[in-house]
Image (cartoon, rainbow, N blue to C red; front, side):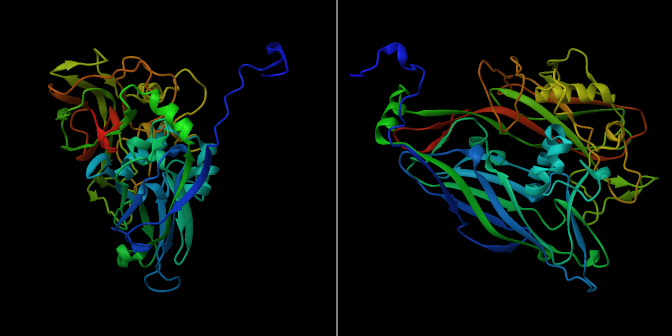
Length: 453
């Protein structure tokens, strides 16, 4: 019994952690420690009773070396895209006991789009530039290109794993008390996937020109005491732990040249579709728009064009959703819906970044790439936030789902209807990234993760 009267005690003071602790675990890949581009890196996150990953404070760390030789005939400089080194990964998979929990496809395009929607200039030049290589040599290229690796140069990069899988993008701690490991797999794109090469040896570039090495998963782990773990499990009536995640899908299509209207069938099958973001990647460049994009020399996965888009509408079973009238293709309205999707429309920060020298409007009106090389301009991102109870903040890797409901498209047809200024657009590659409510459950009986919906 306390010798002090209750009125002297702070009743809001939290209970003791009961000898719980936290620690950092560094894990290396199972298959390789050094590899060229176009390689898959496999991590197996081992089971640990009473342990949980704090995914928002855990990271992937790795190094990249430009293997071309300075002063030689094959010397070439590799310039990262605006999203930096993380955009070099083409796919990221998370599996448990053979079940696929998360599958991010064409991650370089997705990551470039998300960075353009959510990153400030200060972050790009500061922490992002240091950790992920987002800062270019010149401020005029902020939001367009990233850091450069000269011949023979190498750099270390880190990125939080909450960016890499739907199970990691929710706010809760991820349990490692499972019967089997979590398998996290990164597939690196080819040498031209996430950046652009320049220099005398550009025609000699191949997958061996980039070396990826010194991979580590730096996991921040909380280990609960037996009593706290028992309290936690008793809070779940059926013993299962449920995670409300934001899954990321991908639909790719081609927009033909010189069309005034085009409809894309999405074929989505989600019980709760939360958002759609779409971009168009140019396939041609130059003043006459007759020069095909050169993958090695162009930022082909981080340059988005408007392509003379005049209207955009999302349809379920032929009926418009959210907007009874189409989204207009003018820069102000495109920027408005981007900010609504980010939860920042009512704020005066987190503006969409193009560059710091007044070029943001130019990036939104970028209908065609007329230069000799793709610029990396990316204002033309069409966003639909489809959640009925729209949030006031957060991004795809900060996922709060209280009273949040999307649109059901399990047994319905889903389409995007596009309209363009007549006889003006070139053929483009349309990339659409649906975001959907994904319930992932840790089954108490089998101690395995499964996707519930």
